[in-house]
Image (cartoon, rainbow, N blue to C red; front, top):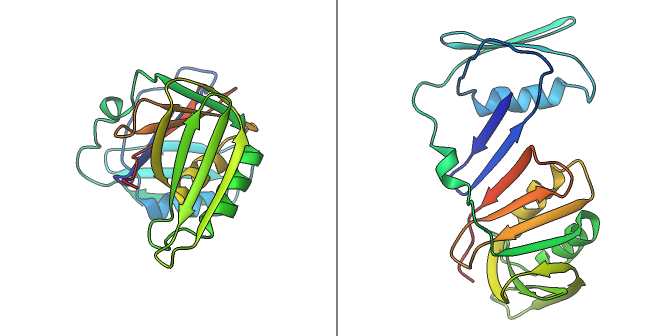
Length: 199
């Protein structure tokens, strides 16, 4: 089963084996329905899913939800996911998330921009505000690639990492103008593509 979601600034992709062959079906499920599924679904509950010509159906014991599918064509997400990544960073998710949260306190509220300064064995995370406040933190990381400075919305980075099941996060970057890709070091079935920001 393949699930993809995008808001135009970022794209999340997850694929999972169901253990058996099923008929092919595809559809665009409304965000409100997905939010409701996340609210009622337990971590280990078994569910049945169905996609008809114009409806999505989720069934659990004592609960059935239907939602009308969105009409139209979903963006070509394969074209959005970068295939070459000269820069590759690996770090514990817990320490990277904590550093981003601390530094982002000083970032502008609207887009929460942070600057990532990548160099071999270290990552410098910086944020500043119009009031000239600035926060900076340096982390020991594994990084292979050219030295690079790139900006991202810190909230997008944190939400992408929060979806990972494992603590090791891999961040693949081509250059300062191209999307970054966040993955788990142990789960090839999930990735999140995030557009950079001009800092």
